[in-house]
Image 1: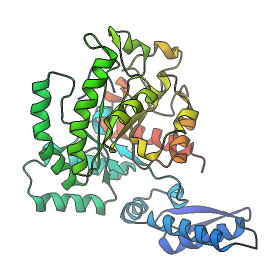
Image 2 (image 1 turned 60 degrees about the vertical axis):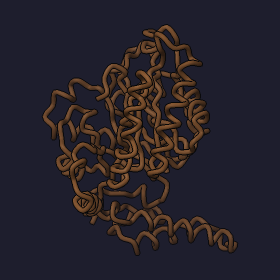
Image 3 (image 1 turned 45 degrees about the horizontal axis):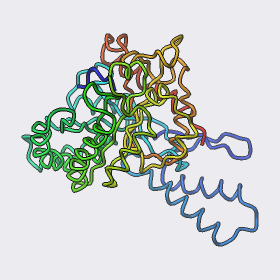
Image 4 (image 1 turned 135 degrees about the vertical axis):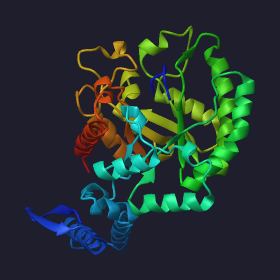
Length: 370
């Protein structure tokens, strides 16, 4: 987050050294997986091992539901999903790349450029009937698009009266999100304060987020909290606050509602001197939402500035290969989206900007080792 502003495809199957092209479909996926399992397993296979193999095949078949089938129809290969290891998906967030789009336009862009999710905008549905919302959700499903994470509608940074006022409206907002099928919301936390000490801010946010998280939990919604990593951001405050994912997990544990985790941004992870080894200590339950970005070349990590970033897999400064493979290994199953604050990208025509963003995500996906 910028702390100053928020506003049928073919798959290649390698068998016996040869590459065979086959159409993507349920029956073939199961056949392929069981064939490869037979190749990898010794002749003497135990009942337990066989059962595990059958479960793996069944799990892979689960990925051939509406989203995978629609992706197939769009001509987007999904070989990694077939193997049952990659559970996260590419999410399109128009505002992050300077594209103005309502929900219908965002849906069309997502289908056109190979995204699998879009960011919700509840404002467009506040006056819609329940049947109209159901029709919209069904159309999204038919096109193979789901929702990513929404924003938390409660202002928790200001005075108590404002917080209480927003909190009173949260049940209605959360109910609408549930109707839309949104299961995640997220927000960001400044890495310091001019008035509150670390402990004062920690205690205040624990209390406020606990109240908000309980309302969200009643609607089957998780809350992701994003830390801000750069030292240049921390230097603006008198009292330093959370600036690493390890510290943020301490806040998550203190909140204690069970539906709160991280909004993990690769850029903030990098600027906070995070490591892949630390990421591997997390679980899918710890992560609610993921942003992926790269960093400018020639700038020391401790001199990086929050609103000067790059699309993922474009500069090679951040170890995105390590980052994205850590997400695979811990089983993260949510949205992955770009938030590059790239002014050149924002000056492009919408289609050009979206295409460039999609291509950067494709390069990131190519780094995945399954």
